[in-house]
Length: 320
Image (cartoon, rainbow, N blue to C red; front, side):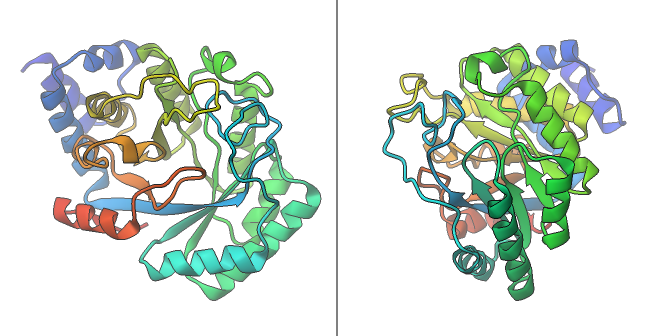
């Protein structure tokens, strides 16, 4: 039995690979690595595919200096700027997505955190959405505390999203207005409030292979089971505008190694997927089993119907 097959079998038997072993995997032949990752996905997750959509619920004027973000006040992108959408507008978007067969809908807001008034308005919107649809509601609302997350859960939210973005070591190169520990504290606050957590990062920020693996290990330690894997879409006007995008092979390798590290997680292709020639299809055969569909926050995405056709062809079943 070769080294790749041995590590595959160990993961199938319940073993958690370590950092050194993940680095070993990263250098293995891509086709074989992806095939074994898909085998692990089949064992732990079966044919279930988690498809969600997002709405840009509050846009622009963000006080944080995240170097990749079009909505940062430190960038010059022309991104839309508007306050929190009304409960009526957010509910209309939820209904539209539910009618297309989407089962999970995330409300994303710009800024470090919501004000008390915004939090109350969002709770009202969530209650209205839950009263008029069967869609699962997620929220991505910055660095809240346990009490604030609890209010959102009581309103009907089920999951909180808060990306780590990159490794602890690389984080200061990406953002200086908040810290990696601020992110971890918010994730733990959401968990303490009874919400499940969605957290991952952006690939192609200039990070190393070690950074990618270290982020995955932190997510494993935190018990996160929904892992967005974004690919940087270099947007003119941001500090990272001139970075060369990753390739489809790069993304396949990343999601395959993540599947070894996080065998029972929903590994979710997210922002930047539209840059891939096959829109992520090869990644869905290499360990990824979730995606954000429709438009992203400030860029166009892939239609829900296109995604549903791809997933049906690959034998996936879209369900929570």
